[in-house]
Length: 287
Image 1: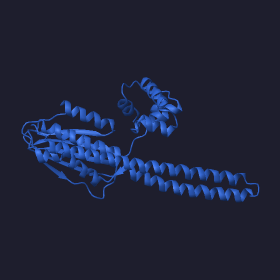
Image 2: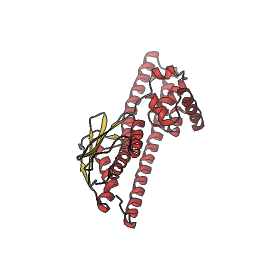
Image 3: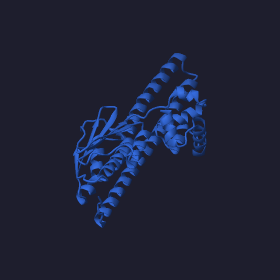
Image 4: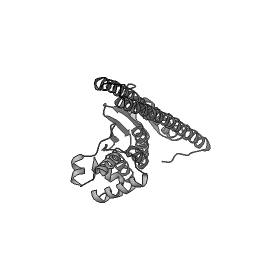
């Protein structure tokens, strides 16, 4: 089954890509400002603490009281900023699903395919940005894998959330002979496993096929027991934990205050010590 793509579709896709890029740039700018403000606030707090502790005119009791007050106020401010930062990197589940519908609209509008959408709860837990992005990509790949079969005219896409996982179901009305060994399905399964999720395929002859995907919303941390067994240094453990969370080299470098080249060096050592051949495999073993 093929779906013609004309200049109108290409223009719409280009406009959507530009809008997505602009949204990402705006969010990045907001986060940069947030981090700069947080840095200034903490510098001021630390300077204030040092001033109180070094003061020769303040008794130990008063100095301790003032230092405690400053630290408590800084913790409150940090929690507020952390909540704001989280809001900038999350996407409401309903909005993420709406973007998925826009992604699949060309198949509905220009193809001979009926796509039915089962909306997620509007009050469902917000999705981390990377989960929302990967979920849309996985659904797009799943729909394409289903319509590769002969006789598929209808696909149903459903999202739900149990509080800890994004639950995705994609079902077709095809011959019901899809299995997990189809190359396109294997590729999807590898992508889901890299996110510590699960993908199951069920097919009933004459009734269609269904893919069920579960994606955890919280990034797993590296196993301390496994890290000890591999003989990793404290720095390597820190890098491994961030790799397992899905962080890229630049983010790891910023989090650990080291250079990206140093991160690459540690990742190479981790691959060798753990016996992994790829970064995704390393992250999966760590989890």
